Image (cartoon, rainbow over all chains, first blue to last red):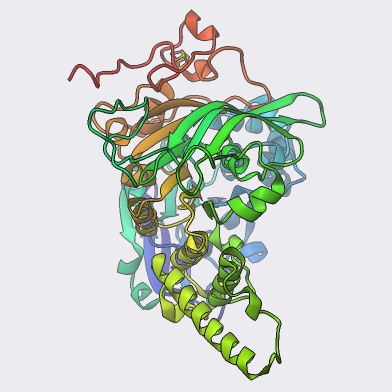
Length: 226
Length: 364
Ligand code: SF4
């Protein structure tokens, strides 16, 4: 179970974009969080993945409360999450070949020796050829790079997947392909999913349950310009 | 604009009903090749042929990297130096007559910059935030574009101290400019009370409208919208698309380049599908998105991938434009491929496929 309770978070203490929001995802469950851009839902996703420290509130991961965020998070909590963002170009080191990009979390956690087999297996799943694995980000399309970013998110076999507008930049076929990879992984491992997006139809088709941002406690007072 | 007489035969691929007069843009056999430093060519666009008519929206759809943005850049004369183009892209003259038409591919940069971009083709950009100047208010950017494109207020710039008469004149010029700026904003439904804001103070939707207002200043007969809905929420996509539709209804020809099938379905009269640099199908939007569906296997696969439909991806990925297979570029992914597909299919009745779904438009 992933439990977010009474989270207030943002980038300016006096104007938090997330106010007093609570949300839980049961083990193995797929929850879609639906909201307009700039509403704070991505910030909440980052808090859940231990990438952004909230001003207040608690995050409990499979029974253990989170005490640190980012590099201060204990390794076993940090590696419980696989995260995919909207813009693959912002989250991929431009100097790395796709194969190294996918293997990077293994290196960072001292499990370099597993890289070979694991990268090949994931590349097959996300549909990247050996030739594409040798390329650098600027030599592939957005869709191909996002495939690599999804493989990277799965490389440590996370129990939780957080997808922040993972398919917003992608065409219909690549979207369907990446969602299928996520679902296949979840079926095998029982991983839970929190996916954030603005496409009602997509989240409705993908998730067990869709939560609207404006229905979360406190979210309604968040000012949005639209 | 003139109305088509009932007995006049429709040219192939003309939009039923909406079209009037001559096409605003006629593209014939347009190809774009990039010569790479490593040697070899990238075939970004191959043999594109289509028309865009006044009052219609043609949606050019395809996934990223299929060549659709290169096609747009070619029309605007914004290709990099290593690009070579062949073919023709005839932009109708202001009077609509054939005499003052301009071939965009043959025109020099000076002509394109002075008379085409902004004046005869209005560009609605992909990321309005990047297109607007961050340090200046929307009003000041509208004023600058108005001065540039209409020339009416030019004399008022940088000429201080020209005496009483002069300053009175420049005062009325200023008022006129202000009025024209507000009118331009209103045409794109940009709220007047936000004109004095900077781009970063606007929501995504308002930034898009500001960029659209700038695109409309020149009252260009052809509007070219390049992925106008990328990154917008569904509601905002709908609103942006509807606004573009209004401009088509007001008589502009609208060429919308997009990977967003929902936006295309919402406002397009016709759809052109691009795959690996070629237009593989041009169809009436109602037929394409309706029960008859597309006739090209790729287009069918693309629609089937939608979450409101089967949500199944097309297997594999598109080929590299620098390394296209001989024959049909879709063959490796196509469920209907046969030996015949080893040769490139030429377009017939709007579809380029050896085994296209039957055209049932005549039989029922
Ligand atoms: S020409 Fe052949 S391979 Fe190409 S789309 Fe048609 S059936 Fe498929």
